Length: 285
Image (cartoon, rainbow, N blue to C red; front, side):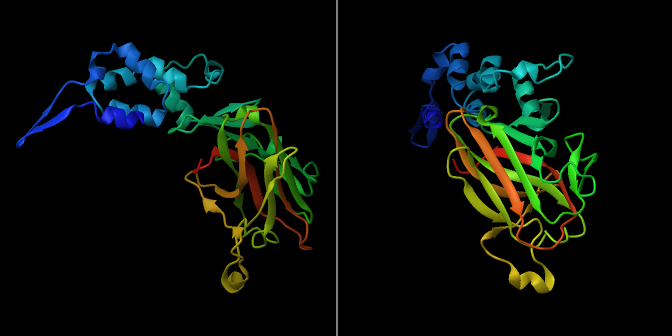
């Protein structure tokens, strides 16, 4: 709505073959007033507004606008030694460079277009069956991980991982998609090409139930692939991800439950490295 209103601001008038532009009513508003109005939109809308006129472009640069898009606790998310030239620079930093919180067990950043919160739970922050037994799982450090230690599957028959988090870490009134972020080795024997059960939901409510592949059938086994099972996708950071399901965060007063389980197959499973569980705003809200 705001974009449509601003699109009319140029006062375009056609006189024969000559097109003239008249002044906009917004041009007579104080710049701080324009900044205040824009701060009630979204980062994407603010960038659109900057292209409308010189007065809007200047107003959008104001800290008044970008501070509104920052989380209330933003000052605690950055090192005190780090200096930013503007709140916009700080906002873009929180979008492009995730920060570790909760003693390094969670990674936090903002979705650039909307300013919505995003979170990744470290595999150290979840419950893994036999996760404390070094003959089944081990904790490794790899350079491409955001976290100091992550879980590597050595050999198990019973594969079960459960995660939980409070919705206060997420943006209210937002639908989130939940992903498991991982790498595989040697095709993830015993696990990579069989459907794995995934559940996502709020505690006390019905969870969504889905099936995922960590790799998916290939070669002669390709004909066994099921269409109702979600295949993983490669991310820009080189990791793989599989979508586990969605949830709606209405009031930030609930607990989230996530599960990834494969206990039906009799085969032993290995070759999986889990960085964590990621919560991002769904593409369709």
